[in-house]
Image (tube, rainbow, N blue to C red; front, top):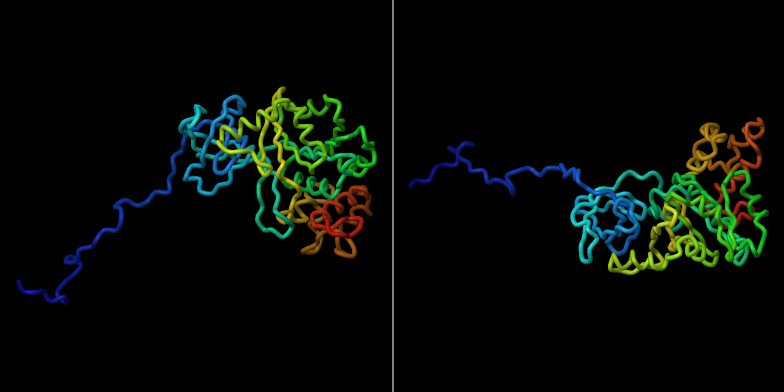
Length: 340
């Protein structure tokens, strides 16, 4: 057969080889209308322990569905589960949805780290556990926890332990103008006031080593050790000191123990984020020059917050408290000028 001159060919003579797949990929994902709601109570190496319908007696182990990609899932998150939700040994459900969070406890590794990490989601309040003595209170840590609360949507609560060793009056006086609620406890007594404050709520606890946080948790949740082991066993791993875990309270509610949080890096927080928690200063701060850190002279000589106090629209002690928090966020001790 004679060869045809290529110049005589047109598009009808060209065979188009189809690409891979005859149907375009769809970005639509399953709605998973049948997903069961659950609360994440433990995380261990790619496995999430969840309380089905927030029932602490119905624990299910789940993996993150491929469609979620790298969506972070942390303790306290409310998720949707599909698959095997029986909770039987060697079964695995899938997390297909993470509901919007009402609050987040964020931190960064340090004040220069640009990557923020969510430690706990959906907690209503943060108990800042601080010993009154042995070890002495670290107000810089308390201030940073307060900043994390104000910017994350949590209610802060000062939980002062070891009241048998020292009086709480001096420390409480430092935070009086911030209107932070507080409870005082002793190692040898139960605290009905604390139990009532926690009942029916999701509460996170933070504190340095030695302040009595473990003693507090064991009093609140008598079988805390068994509960922690149960969460770890379900996940076929082990609960380590860098993992948060949610423990159910006998009277209802949850406490989220965060033994891995030693300090809060605040690289993700701006001065305006903190000022927003002080209604009397929030609107005037918008008149400050760009880049104002609101620390006042000499760092910010044109800050207008001093004018608010001079006009009698705010108490001087409130501005002092605000600037102490701003200094803590900047990594500087407000009294000595030294790094925190």
